[in-house]
Length: 351
Image 1 (cartoon, helix red, strand yellow):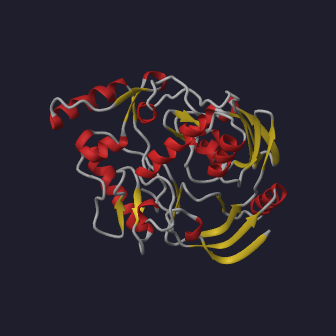
Image 2 (cartoon, rainbow, N blue to C red):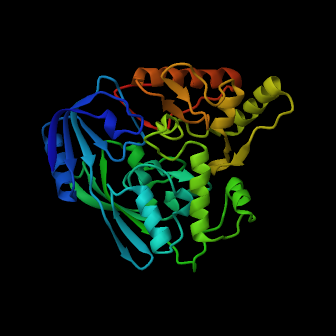
Image 3 (cartoon, one colour):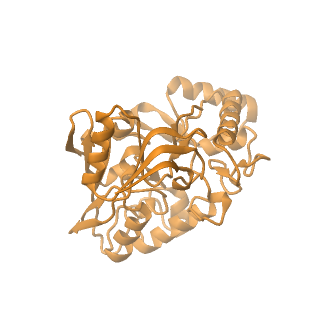
């Protein structure tokens, strides 16, 4: 375990933004994680958990407390089941399960940055898949009960980009995640997303070559600047900054009226969501509200490849980032009456 005082946090985030932590602890075992959390709780000290830093926006003033960087690694395979450490790289785990083990279930989530432990918190998803579809259990330290617990899939409270862990951010610290994958004889899971199906040349719902499915998803993400590249400022982001809005029936009807008023007969992208809701595309809203790819003239701009990503072009501050995010959010609301919600976790700042 390593401990540093007045430690810079910006290098630990994919935005490369944020001020220092009064204390930074890097833990490489589950016991070190638990001991650090217990000590901070006993002292009444603020605690910030950092994994891969890909879903984190830290204020310019930093964090006046203990930042705990989870750096545990490794996984155990038992047939088609995987038990992975929270600090393990998600992209590395996907690569291994697909290329080395030939197991389906994570291939459409390839290229998502961050750590394994963060995936159930956000219920990360892409291209028609969510991590909730493969998680069987999450081992976590429960700060309320002061003990290590295991939550089954149903107890995780998964929904669109949400979970019990996100709903109670100060309660659980994820230690390990357990997944049930599928041995489909080198075939992928069903291809649910139209863009992926088109790129693969298959019909939606069909299976395809497992390795090719992963490579196709990586290529699609790279084309949108969603695969991290330290040399490319267009990828210095948190991926999608806003979630796709889910509208109830009244909101849906009002939204369609606004679209007709503004755009005429243009039909917005709409998808069925849980509980009778309707999901629409945040990227479409941003673009049609007047914020195209590359929008902005300062140190933070929309990605030149995808309107959903806000990017640090170098020498930016967190306040620069928030200023553009607010401009986009308010512009979309003025145009369509829909309020976009940030996907990254905000520390010491508000949108």
